Image (tube, rainbow, N blue to C red; front, top):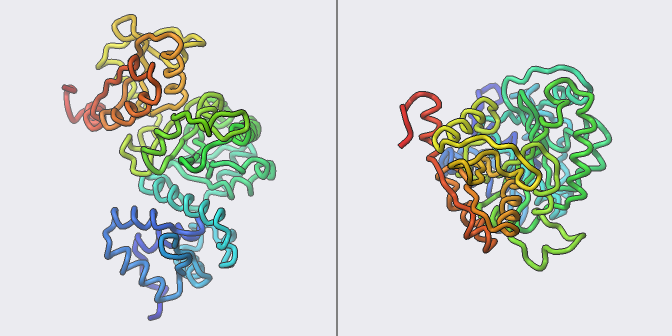
Length: 390
């Protein structure tokens, strides 16, 4: 069967080849997400079997540990269809390169992240020139959020070579700042010294950038976990996680100096990523929580930096629908020390997850009260589709 290059290419075929090109290897997890979105037969027969038969992709690995990689023919086909859309120069066709299981694991995770961002409206095409302009202090216009991989970041400045021994996979660039995207899990925790080096490099290089990227408050973190169980595990302290030189994600949550940190999962059940990528929408969501629960502002102190408001004039309250891990760990520590009641507000879809996290501490389980609003009702209220939230 021959491929005809002058025919239009479908969206599933384009995104499949693009993920292979940018990420290196598509995992069975990414295939499952594609099937859930586009249908089993469209992906299994219309895309995977079609490209394998035509020599554009190759299946590697064994049963249970397989993936799909792009062949030179697949790269050529994609470059003919979209000559200026993707970065074709970083492509490698060496199958021996994929015998390193650590490399394969990182590549598979990258394609999973790429697809999760793509389905949330983040552009994953080539933006090397835009990122280079930001780093070198030039003004750019960002019409929609786009993602820049760690490999692309290293190309913009050699100083980044020192920093990427971490679980960071790149940055989402928005019109108001940058989100560094991490993807740890229960098998791969974060090391504080590695992530600090990355943060210092980014903040140092961006200090000469144009506004808003030169502002330290524009540098944020997104922790993107495969599952909710992985999220809960990151807050659980076990004997193997205790020690100065042991990887412990909680230490990163507490001490890494990003202005804002957020947690989400591949499924996106907690909240839509667009809520944090659109600054005005984020502010509107916070306003709805403040109005509904009749919260009053408070002056933040060092030991209660997690609480931005008061409920009923006396109960420390944090609006935490973004699942800011720093606020969660600080709130848990505060309840352990003070045994005082705290109110934590979130979306209804997050309530069980937050409950599981707080139950990792006996003091937090008994002193952190979780209240919620349905995310759909909040968004509908903001856009005027409903007059009030019941």
